[in-house]
Amino acid sequence: MKLLLFSTIILPLLELDAARSNIPTTIYKKRFFGARGGSTIVQEKDDEDAVINKEVMALGKYRMEQQELLQIRSIILSEALAERGLPMKTRTEVSTVVGKEEPEVIDWDCAMSTTKEPKTCLISFDAEPHTKVIAPIDTDMWISLAVLNRLRRKDPTKIEPMWYSKYAILKSWFNDESSNYCILQHCGVEGIVLAILLNNPQKSVVLKSLLGIALSGMILLVLPLLNFIVNRFAVSSLVWMNWMKWARFVHAPFPLKLYLAQLAWKGLAKVFNNIEKRVRDFLIELECTILEERMPLTVGPGSQQINTNSEEDEEEEEEEYSIDSDSDDDSDSDDSSDSDDDSDFE
Image (cartoon, rainbow, N blue to C red; front, side, top):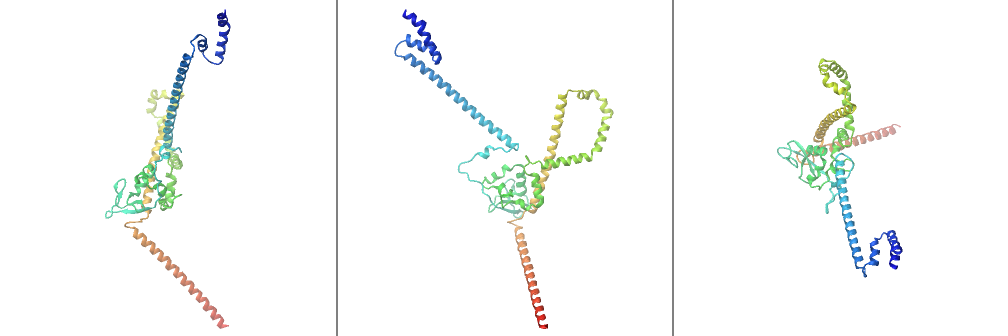
């Protein structure tokens, strides 16, 4: 009777309580029907804790791997966007080396490489004769001025490593806003115009706009000739004899026409980029020529002539000043003598 009462009333209540508290019913059954001491219950609990710990560790490992992959993908994406000209931080910009000093802002020396006094070059080993070379002041690490400017325009990341990243060459010599040693101040108005056209090739639209306007003007000038050629070609027998070949494109569906228009646009854009590249190379060579002509020499042959010319100019200014002062003294003396004569006459 007692066993029947337990199995029909008490056990269902225990199972209901276990279901509410999310505890397996086998634990309650083993408490009443199992051996005393609870050794089997503790063993099962330890096994469950071990399984849970393994699952937690596996989940933590998976999340860590996903975080590492996310960081790697973000680094690759930022590098690709920076190469396209977007203002993104790259790995080299944010990485720091322990004990590395910041590059030094430094002045420059300019000399002429001649057959009698040749100069070395960091790129071509020997600079060409009768060309100007430049180096950080009080050093002999020379580089051709034209080669340096050409490299600055095409790949500026290779400049400072040539001096072992010891000197801030770009900031010192080519930044006219924050440096007193900028060499662009000797280029004049022509250099300023070229700098506006050539600076920031990935972002600047000045050169592309001017080039587009120039090409549009040329097309407008030859538009009557183009119209005549197109009309003659459209009514020629060569076109209409091959009607069966190109008629399929005329009656083609709209997506195919859109795809063909896209291919034509890409071809025109490629031609425009090639023209822009040629124009940019021409402007870079023009800027190099201006630097070669107007860059002053500070050491070597030719620098003495500049110094003597400056001294002669100073002497001429002093002589002019002395002549002006003498003429002023003479005029003062004449005025004083005239006043004395007037007083004597009275």
